Length: 197
Image 1 (cartoon, rainbow, N blue to C red):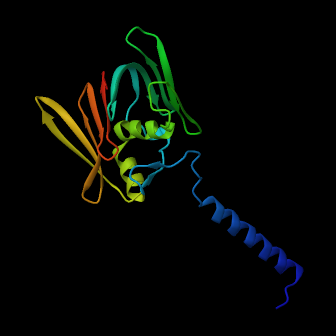
Image 2: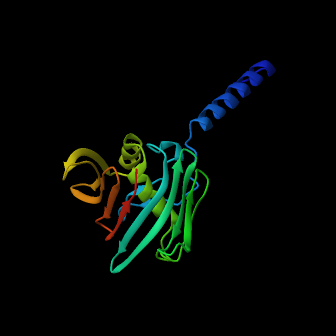
Image 3: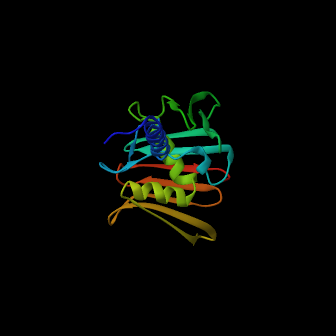
């Protein structure tokens, strides 16, 4: 089939427009390594804008990784621009830092296991503090279920967040006004965050 010059120009323009529209519809790749919630289910970190409400204040972080336990004081600042944490020991000496925004994530602290990727600490924080509907969407893409329920524990209003793979609960988070208990039941570690949320 032969086309004249005007028809060729028109076809070329249509092709360019189609290409641009197709590329615009593609998801932007994440700059972060995927977080394996299970051995096969990958969670992609959410943008900072999905935080449920800002956090700014002192927290006490008690962690347990197998037989290793630690207690840190932390100053946590988190909002729609990202997450920043500074860690201190009980004497006020600096024990490292963590930061996350939409383009970079870093963890520098001798307290956490050396092989812990910063993305995993960011994911743990997001599971606790980010918007439920955003978490639900992202976890469903990974083949996981996210559920949230409200209750009462010794007179305190409690929010329970759970992430499940099939019938197995992988992560359970219990939140009150001044305490968050995070338990990764699959990997065998937990955090207790105490402060005002």
